Image (tube, rainbow, N blue to C red):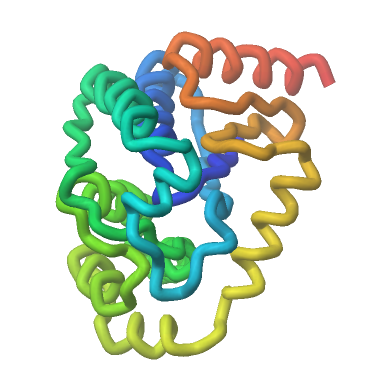
Length: 212
């Protein structure tokens, strides 16, 4: 069965959701799963060079105290899936378009979905600015991709429209927050759901397919 993961690379709940989905798949080892990663842009208005993270979060949530409470809760949720968020290392909130492009490039060129995990780790654990093309080139090379090929790709306009089109597609589906998971094109659930819930969604989607 197919599971589409609609996500943004700068979304901490998407990192948690990825780990919880992996736990759900481990609960259903007999099910063959085709994972499809779909771009979503939480911060479409952010300029190409990104924006100061503290200023961005205060503008979004209202105060440093509220930001601290929100991200404290996210950090606690991350610990439950072995993610030790290092939010203090992050100086900038990046524009995520190029990171989504790198994922698409990697999937087409044999790097596999591990590129998603590497991007999350580099941003949320090491605090690297994944909006910078030189950082993305290093990440791609770590995943086994050719650096010159990545450089040429990121300096072109290839797949920029694809990222925006996928973002628009998600909104047309009624998805306004991520992560979201689409099972066999006909069942959707949003949020970093617990593994047991995602496993039940897999069961329901299989049952629906069998009944068709």
